[in-house]
Length: 115
Image (cartoon, rainbow, N blue to C red; front, top):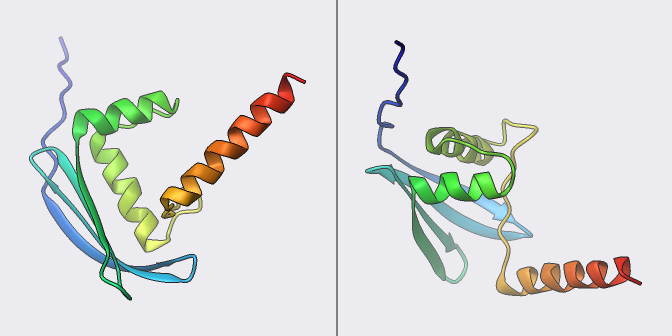
């Protein structure tokens, strides 16, 4: 018999400067105890968003997208997006208004497909 298992991921903490839509941010990514911690601070006004995601949550949402990733692979992909050294992985920050606009556009397209 062959047994396959994942070794625990080494804890990391990295901070990056990034600009999205002309706005400068300080972004901190860390992992601890199989959880992903993200903190994003808008440099000009100090507004801050942060959250912690369990490895099982990350794996569940990647499965729901149809592109299943192990937690460690997802974290590596996220970090590569900060470095900008991947043609296939990129990162963007969306505001509440951005998400509402995308939702409205999706609903409009869904309604047009039934017409």
